[in-house]
Length: 340
Image (cartoon, rainbow, N blue to C red):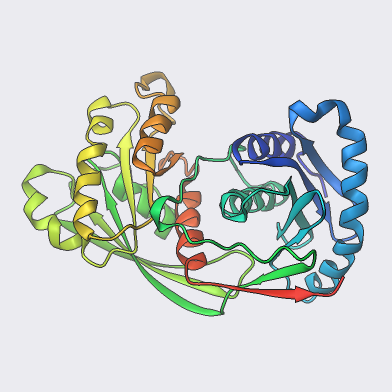
């Protein structure tokens, strides 16, 4: 199998740069062969020794994991040594993402990034189109701790199998691409024609959480952005499980209205995970809002931030993956010990 190692290297570089307290990341096959690896630049002088030491730690754990892996039962897990925290996550049928973090790192800070990285690795290995950049993720007040007791045992993360139902609300100014974003995700198509949504458009999508026997049933409420629908919109936010605020990177006024949309979400009366989406990145020459200022605003509002092109499908599925991960993980979790 031909592997785009350059793409993998770019992805791992983005992953360890973006994710707090990471030391290294490796992509390994089920026999323990390292396909790609990255160590944080500040530790580059000890890259070889560090990776050798990590490989020695990983090898016996990997043997146990791959026994479960062959039966499709593993999914994800963690292991603590005296110096490191290791996170293992399936990345396709034949490979694992191994994340090595500082011993004091919080797993809640790592798992969302690791999950998206593993999904992107799967796509690279399948020769599918993928953006080798990890988006900014903020759990905010919706965060739930998933810290296990640190007793030096391999722990498998178990999510209760079954179906989960979530109401997802999309908000943003008119013509920013909300409807096309949802269509691309739900129907895997892009509609060039723009028709103003009348009040709200509701679509449904079953989404299987990667590596788990879990199905997220999304009821996606695409709200009209025009002011004349503002009074009608209030009732649509009721009982929302999560939200997406979309702006157009080529129209600054849509970015400036993000705060107003956040105010409408506050009517829900409880904290929910919300992703800020900068859409139409395919129109690079017309771009006005740069990624840095969008990330700054997202941090101020405690939101995750990701950039998409609904037209080309770039990062569209990742938006919904992030929310599926947040929502399902908030309903888990057991940590099952496995003997090494």
